[in-house]
Image 1 (cartoon, rainbow, N blue to C red):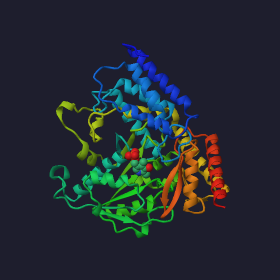
Image 2: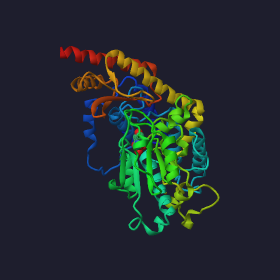
Image 3: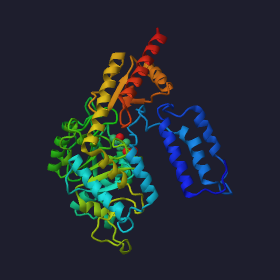
Image 4: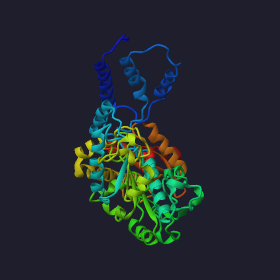
Length: 460
Ligand SMILES: *Cc1c(COP(=O)(O)O)cnc(C)c1O
């Protein structure tokens, strides 16, 4: 095996072969790594090597030890969380972008990265029906997208009260209030913390049976308030009532941010966009590329109507960065040097077109309804209104639910996890991989049906 020297093409060939081999094996492997695959990770724990190792053997070792220890989220039967798969064009454009190794922070350092972000950002605004004048930044995930938006919101709300946070810092600033649902994704609280907004500043609102904010029960809003809404509840998939809340917020001078990590994509579907009606009235939005659009991980975007607020936070004016007429990517993101995230956004949106994006959303939602009816037929109880890609369900009681979930997971052919919904232990299905087929849904349903039968027999 050992080769003293490899040419560059040898190592790229090895990576290409390993990737093809991984892809080809996806359907036959277990969704989660086997115990043996996890055990063999121990062999990675060696001392820092003194001598060099040839590159091809490193890629081969990565494939031999690493590939089996992955979770097959790019396959069709991982339903555990909304993580999305990775479309071929997304992976391929990401490979090419890695080869380019562009520093996407400045237009001068990468004209192609800069232009692709400008184009892909504008396409996204159009596709999602958001205000054309909104600015955007390409970040790692929805958490950072929300942080970026919250930082802009903070700057804007304080500026309107005559306080310049960039100049004076937070310590003497008026205390902002945050109003959000008790059901909001926990990363929103994390993002608020990064922006210096603490738990004591948050007022939570009660929600209805689907986890939506009840607008009438919201605390009073004012010009010192940041409202955080949700497009796509991580359990039920439900959407807050954007129109009602945004009208209230506008009247009060409050800022509205929407966490649309996966749910914002509903706007791309004619069948589902009604769920997100009025969302364009908000001030800022977060959405992941690495979930429902099926881009590789480390890919999200935020949009913000208030360009001045974004500039307040991220605007850089160091002369060496050579500001010019071109959009400077780093004026919109927390980082300076970073990878060219716009590349796979552009390639994938071009590959899919409007219709293709809508198809991914519609297909996932359709599969979720097949799961709902199949599970009900099998004797499970579905707890949520299946409006999107999420299905929350139980067996007759917690003991049975736990036992059934254990059997489903042990099948190795499909993976989903537990959640808590309205205080009840439940199982949750999220359909978000573009690789999921009808055959995957049918095979998974057969396993779930069989699991409940076995649990019932064992209990008699
Ligand atoms: C996944 C998710 C997040 C966090 O997104 P990251 O991309 O993991 O940072 C936030 N909100 C919702 C609703 C999510 O599904």
